Image: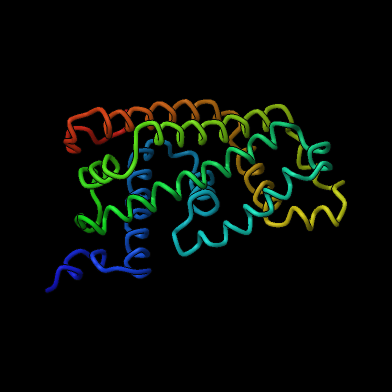
Length: 232
């Protein structure tokens, strides 16, 4: 069996190897998030929304670019700035930054995987080493900060404007066309979060604490994933 086969095709060059690496990274993140947050068993809709609309599989991520283009049009449109609360625009900007930072980090980790192919599937120890080689602690903390901003701004909208969905009914049809997939995404996210508004603060604090601890383990620990794995 050749080296490329041993490493799931990662050692090769070109798009197929990139796709394989991206799939391994996604599978690792999904498995570890489901593991680390298994105790939060009352938020299935939120988890589904995250894995479908925020961080979908690599083969579905191309569709996000259309949504992101719609978001950019919205935050540049003066009418939307009047109709929507400023927090909505802040949420959109942070979401765009989070998506870019995530894509950049995953791309660099995938490049590192080609240099030194890890085991398949990825485990914590291998991922921690890849992370340290391809990214920095500051970058990881900025991604977490963006994620928390998106969550917090969304929470503020839910708590301050429980009837925000009614605003969408008065937006003129031409502007709805401009909004495109971004508005559909926003409505879906708003309705999903609205169902959990009593627990949003707890979710946010739990995620921030666990992910911050994880970053510390990756960049400040000994690198022994067996001793470092886990939530809080």
